[in-house]
Amino acid sequence: MASTLTDRLSRLVKTMRGQARITEDNVQDMLREVRMALLEADVALPVVRDFIARVKEKALGADVVGSLSPGQALVGIVNRELAATMAGNEIGGISDINLAAQPPAVILMAGLQGAGKTTTTAKLAKHLIEKRKKKVLTVSADVYRPAAIEQLKVVTKQAGAEWFPSSADDKPLAIALAALDYARKHYFDVLLVDTAGRLAIDQVLMQEISELHHALNPVETLFVVDAMQGQDAINTAKAFKEALPLTGIVLTKMDGDSRGGAALSVRQITGAPIKFAGVSEKIDGLEVFDAQRHAGRVLGMGDIVGLVEEVQKGVDMAAAQKLVDKVRSGDSFDLNDFLSQISQMKKMGGLAGLMDKLPTQLTGKAGSMGPADMDRAERDMRRMEGIICSMTPLERRKPDLLKATRKRRVAQGAGVQVQEVNRVLKQYEQMRDMMKKMKGGGMMKMMKRMGGMKGMGGPGGMR
Image (cartoon, rainbow, N blue to C red):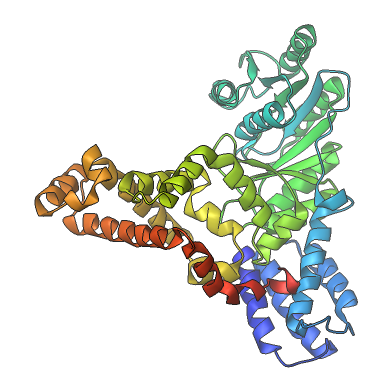
C-alpha cells in the first residue's frame, strides 16, 4: 500500500496545482485514488468505505491553509485519518504493553502457523529485557509442529531470556501451568507463552487456546498476524476475536513490499490496538507501533524519528567522533574509514532500512527502487566490503599504492573483475573529496549551497 498510495497522491497534488479551494469535484478525484490504493493493498471493503466517508466529511469545503495547495491539504487530511484509524483511542498513536499485574505477568501469543509467533515471542522477550528491564521466561505450548519447542529455545537464548523446557508428549495446558509455577517460584516478571498455530482456522485450535486463556488469565493476549496476508489476515482476525478477548496486535513482516493494508483492517475489525510491528528478521527487529509514524511512512513522509533511533542504536558514536576529528586535523580519509562507513550503514538496517524512513522528497529516484533494486544495492555493498577486505592493511591506509598488479590480486582475492575494484576506488575517491570539502569552513559553504532545501516540506506541510 505504501508505494501505491504515495504515487497516487503525488500525482494528485500535481494535477490540483493552482486550485484555491477544496471542492466536491476535486475531493472525488482524490478519494477515487485513495480508494483504489487501499483496495489494491487488500484493505477490507467495509474499512475502506468507512475511511473514505470520514475523509470526505472532513475535506469538503475546507479552505486551503496558508500556502498549501488543495492537493497538499487533502493529503494532510488523509494522513490524520490514517493515523486515527490505526491508533483508535491510544494517546499519541501508541499503545504500550500492560504489565500491571502480580508477577509474573502472563502474555499469551496467538495466531496462525507461519505468522511468526515463535520469533516474535523471542523478540518481545528481548524488548522487555532491554526497554522495560524485566526478567523474562518463555515457554512453548506448541506440541504439534516439529521442532517448534527447539526453535523457541534457540531464539530465546539469542534474546537473552530464560526458556522453560517442554515436550511434545505433554498437554499444552499442563506445560503452561508448569511454566507459570516455575516463574512464580523463581521470581520472573513476565511469562511469555507461545501457543500452537494451524495453517487454517479449526475448532480444535480455538478450543485449546481458549482453555489456555481461561487457566492462565493473561494480562495480555496478543494476536500475531502476517502483515502481507491481505484479506486472509482479516478473516483470521475475526475468528480469533470471537474466540479470545484480544488485548493487542503484533504485525509481522512489515518490511515486506505491500505493507499497510493489514494494519488498517485488523485494527478496525478486532478493535484491539496494534502494539508492535516486526520490521526485520533480526532478534531486535521489533518496534513499538506508532500509528502517526506509520501513517507518515505510508504517505511517503518518511519516519525521521525512527531514523534517528536507528542511528543512535546502530552507530558507534565514539568511532564517528574519531573520524570527524581525523578529518578536521587534516588527515586523509582512507579505505579503512570507507569500510567503517559501510559497516555503520549495515548496522542501521542497510540501504532499504534507511530509504524506508526517509521522506520521498529526499530520496528522489532512489525512493522508487523496488525490492529487486534494493537487493542488488545491498549485494553491491557486500561486494564492496569483500573487495576492501581483500586489500592489505597498508593498501587500505595508502590507496595510491593500488596499481595494476595489486588491483588484479585484490580482484582475484574478492572473486570479482578488476573493473569492480576500480569502481570501488572511484566511489572511495568521491567520498574522500567530499570529506576534504568539510574540513575547516567547507561544511558551512556546503550547507549554504543546500539552502534551497530548507523550504522543502512533505505532504500536508510537514517540515
